Image 1 (cartoon, rainbow, N blue to C red):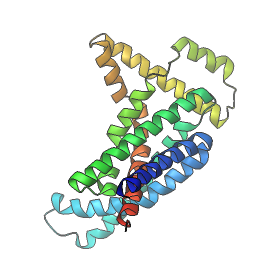
Image 2 (image 1 turned 180 degrees about the vertical axis):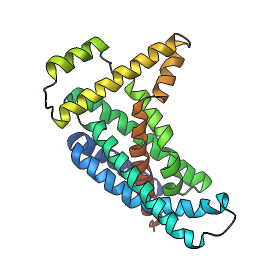
Image 3 (image 1 turned 90 degrees about the horizontal axis):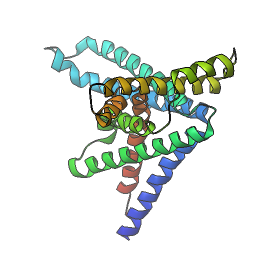
Image 4 (image 1 turned 135 degrees about the horizontal axis):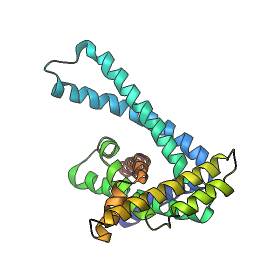
Length: 242
């Protein structure tokens, strides 16, 4: 029965990851709005709790009336991160090239799967609290995985990009058209950075460094949010096991 239960948990985990990537791919606007709301709901309490914990580290006194400042700063930070997560989530999945978006969704799902596994291992072996640890620590590594995966997408040259802007992009582009152009623009910029780094470093190392400095790293904020929520949800179900 224990083996069957573990198999069921793995199936639920994969289903949740697939659902997140599927919603992002099929309904990017709803995905962005939902991501922003979830980030705000989860982040507000965590940011305030973190600031309460850090206050004695920076100031040699108890918070006292400063609790109002802590709450205010925590709310501002959580709102800022929620807006960032929503915008990044929208730009990640909004576009006109369906083949490119399918590839993005697959890479997103793989990165999310790896993030959930990391959180679950830390929960089991180090008794880590997924919401607290993952929310503040997972964004960078998951953003790096996602960014590295997108390096396999072709990047148009500057000349090709200029032609598209001049002849293919309408004067008043739709959100999908604008997002697609922005994606191609950042891919081209990343390609330029990698070429410049290749003058100094080995091409493989240059590619790795390029993934680190890419704007695609920002998607780590979205990935970390869903990774901790899925891991926390699976842990809650496991605790109810008779």
